[in-house]
Length: 115
Image 1 (spheres, rainbow, N blue to C red):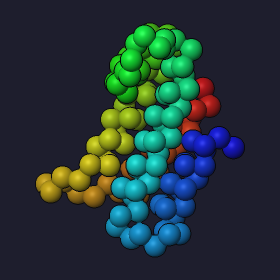
Image 2 (image 1 turned 120 degrees about the vertical axis):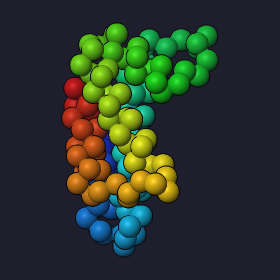
Image 3 (image 1 turned 45 degrees about the vertical axis):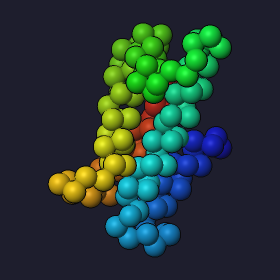
Image 4 (image 1 turned 180 degrees about the vertical axis):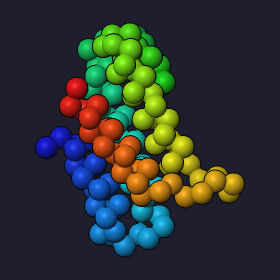
């Protein structure tokens, strides 16, 4: 199992309430899933990144992924990463992300990793 797969397994366990984090569980699971997605994106971008590029942003990697692989993969990756990023950041005026929402995003990361 890859490191990303283990992170997603931990995210699922958090969402199942295994670690007793209560209301913090979904946001923590989102952070694990976003890390797994970013690790996958690093693996995908390694062949076309050169050492002269420096450190491209995640958004830049997603744009290039869409151009190199196909538009669907790039757009799907962008939507999933954006959803996870929104879930990770706490805003006083927003509700806590739901377990169902995060579980759906974790599943989307798994699907992307299998493509």
